[in-house]
Amino acid sequence: MLCARRASEVIACDISTKQLTILHKKKTSNVFPVAADIESNIFKPETFDGIFCSGLLHHFPDFCSALKMLLSYLKSGGYSIILEPNGNNIVFAKFSNFTPNLLHSIFPSTRTVNEHYITYQDFQKCSATLGFKISQVFTLTFLQPDRGRSLLDIMIRMRTLLAKIALRLLPRWLSNDVLVVIIQKA
Image (cartoon, rainbow, N blue to C red):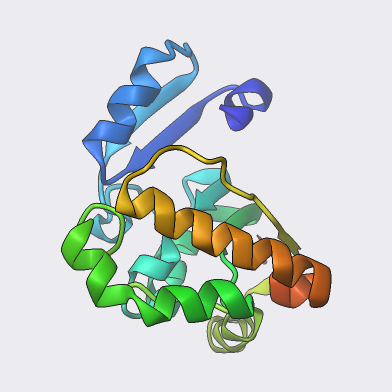
């Protein structure tokens, strides 16, 4: 929705029709939802001036190939803003890696089997391979509110508690939840 306020036209692409239905209910006249997988070549190369991508790349077995596909849709000189779970976050990565199969078996819609966390170093390696320029990198923290009493909510509260402790003890780079990478296409 932030993009919709600043752009004349926004194409909202998601593999989940459920997410697009929620977006459609907001009735934003300049947002056009498209149900698709980024690997499906639904868009022509160099279609977009800017791409905002949140929580997508860590679901692909080879995130560098997925990023290459995503950046192929970006016009020369355009920017892509990518938000991913911070693989450098010690608590987040260790907690999530400790329980992947358990979480997937109990909550299949919250995790994919091949999910992994991407670090800044992973983006650097991919940058060297694909030849794109990383313009800026920083981290953020989104502490999730207490939502309920389900097993998933309890696990989220445990992770949030550990994250709060880590925020007090560790540098932000290792304790923030979200890695933000801004890429400019040459």
